[in-house]
Length: 295
Image (tube, rainbow, N blue to C red):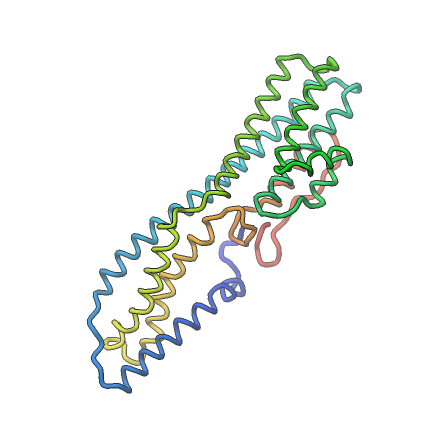
C-alpha cells in the first residue's frame, strides 16, 4: 500500500509508460492521416460516449473500492481478535504451571495470521510461519489443504488441553472459543473476497468501452485540435484509462502489489502486540520502503 501523499514519479511512469506510448502513437497516426489524405473526420458524439463511459467506470471503481475496504475491515477484526485471544490466554491461565501453554497459543496465533497472509497471496508458507511452530505442530498444519485453518484448529485443541489440565474452566474455554469463531469468520470473509471475482460484466465491458473510446477519441477531435490532437487526445484518453486501472488495482486487496493491503505490516503489528502481552521481546514494526510502499 502506498502510504505517501502521492506515489513517486518513478512508480507512476513505470505503470503508465506503455499506455502513454500506445495512445500517443495512435493519435499521431490519426493526425497524419487527416492531413495527408483528403477525408473529413466524422462528427462523433464524444460527450455522450464519455458520459456513458464515466458511469460504467464509476460503478466499477466503487465496487472495487468496497472490496478493498472490506478486506481492510476484516483484517482490522483479525488484529482485534488476536489481541483478545492473547489477553484471555494470559489472564485465564495460571503461572507458572501454564506458562509454556501460553507461549504456544500466542505463537500459534502469530503463525496463523502469517499463514493466512501467504494463502491470500497464493504463496507457500514462509519462514514467518514456520519459526513460530514446533516441528510436530508445523508438520500437522502443513499437511492440511488449508494451512491457516489447520493452525487454528490446533489452537482450539490446546485450549481444550488447558481445560482438561484444570487451568481454565468451561466458561473461560467457551469465551476463548468465541474468539476463535470470530477469527474463523474473518478468515472466511477474506477467502470469499479472494475467490470471488467481480462479475464478468464489471470486468469486460468497462475495459472494452474504454479502449474503444480511446480509439475513437482522436478521430473526433482532430478537426478541432489539428496538430495538437496527439497531446490533447492522449491526455484525455489517459484519464479514462487511469480510472479503469484504479478498479484493476483495488479489486483484489490481497494480490501483493503496491496498491494492496499491507499484510506484512499488519501481521507484524499482531506479532508485536501478542509477544509483548506475554512479556517477550518483540521485533520492530515494518516501515515503508524508499518508494513509500508499505508491504
